[in-house]
Length: 389
Length: 143
Image 1 (cartoon, each protein chain N blue to C red):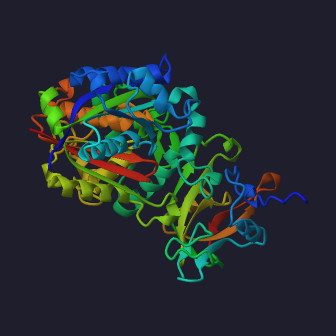
Image 2: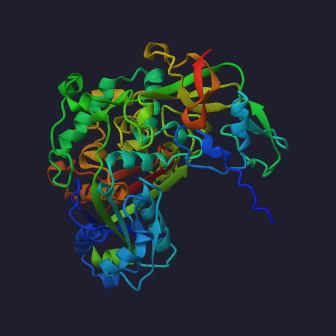
Image 3: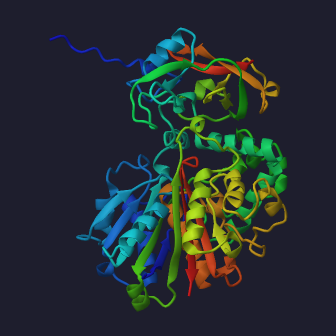
């Protein structure tokens, strides 16, 4: 069977208050990816435009962006699974190329969150959950993940300090990622100082420092058939496995709270398809929208046994020099989380790592990388496994 | 012809309701009578909370109401210091999830409980609570 490769990656700098419109924001990632792939707009057969609705005013953004990027008259469409939109875009593009419908497909993820206030943003994200039965109680994303954190603590003895260690790691790498929105250090002392903003309560047991940064940003991934990849790219990165899953939108419909079933199921599918085990992953990007989300990812992806994620971070095993480096680009916590752009940004990081082009964030000689991208509160899960020649 | 009456009882649910019309609008009437209800499929017996009009197991739409009675166990909770737009007046408040005999229920802890009272594993009961402006919800109290 012919393979499918990523031949181009791009990402805008993630910022607060991008000084331009959504089409201009999208262009930044697109230009970098097209130049990286060494192609022109004429080589692209189709585009998939990914974001979460209701942040900016544009309805059906696919047509508007495709025109601005020079991707008409090729087919385009809009796709969303909230925070995992652009990795869902990758899976759909993969199937289109694999089916022989198109040779080269562009996945463009974007989000301009700064058009609304933080409280409005919380309300919209909350409405990504169950609006009939849960939103009337005043839910929001940090509170939902806080329910997971409390359950994990009650079951396994995980502490607030364990979660803070994950934020300290994220900030270690956010400082050396020039595309990150938050490039300042975070220390354990900051979490212990009640006067420090990092220690401020949000939704117990999660504090300000446990939550990712809202940001404006865009990402772009260009996929190609094996034939085209070999023609255009010196360093194609191959898609070895794709897995995806969904679950009950309401918490009352779920059975597991100390982990995310979608991540476990998507990982099983992706590992099986790629023919690799968790031990063979050399570098990973996981969806750390909150510190507890990274802790659960360690366990749901098989990097640690259930309840032992805390041992991994305490031993610094997920640092760049550790056994399984995770989010060495700052993660969502420090790099920022512009919803629709996040999956593409994670994929870009792993592609650069596998090509040996990750600069100061480079892990030593990785061969297989993994991306874990979650939509909503564990509502959608995508796991993608990538490898190099 | 007389204008058809719109049954929008569900708009009374919670501090801010985002749904006004639902086939399970009777849930609101039950709340007003002091009962929190789940639903049970008459054909295959599947039980659901939140209640629903249709069974995903056997595709039947013949559902019975079933009271969420007795004691439940608190599975997890979170106390919010920030809230979404529309909930500013409620802050701080604690959302929670509890396991009852047949179903799990998502809701809020009663404000009568102090922080020290709320622990994973505690026994709770769920009861309707009247809110401002004629709105209604339910909450968990210590059983």
